[in-house]
Length: 176
Image 1 (cartoon, rainbow, N blue to C red):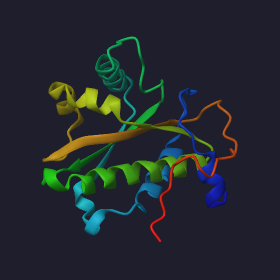
Image 2 (cartoon, rainbow, N blue to C red):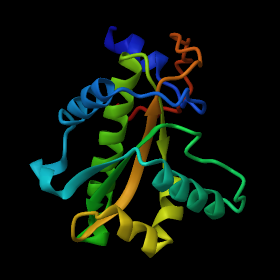
Image 3 (cartoon, one colour):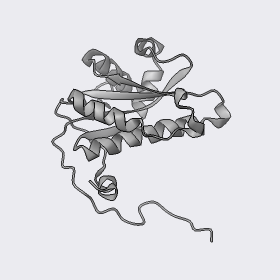
Image 4 (cartoon, rainbow, N blue to C red):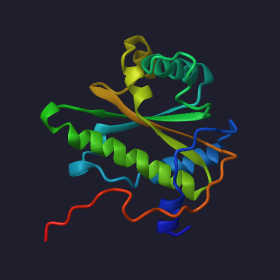
């Protein structure tokens, strides 16, 4: 798939068949290794692959509670959550580690769509997770790291077609 086609095909998928092969997961994770990290500090970013159904259910419930609706399922039944954690040593510079995590998540999403897999970037559910220290402890995150965002992925029956994207979808200001 060409880069622009991949970009125009990527979307937030919210329904999954429950399938993700080890080969598919490995390929997506390998793509993540290409992600840039500010100042080359790769040791400040970590991916935790969660496929354990009980743990996914706990995280899903924490997210639903965070959104005020325990019946809501913000992981959308996906068979895998890749949680991205990062060290936020200097809150005044938190834009760098948070951007590193976001760029990594998008790199994973682009790899997934290129492979015909569905994915969805996860933010609010991670805030719900972080509100439950006992749940965070189960994840064994590296010392000093905070769960920042995540991505769910798996096979989907949703249509993954190239879409027309308006050229003015996001406002642009030119400063010539």
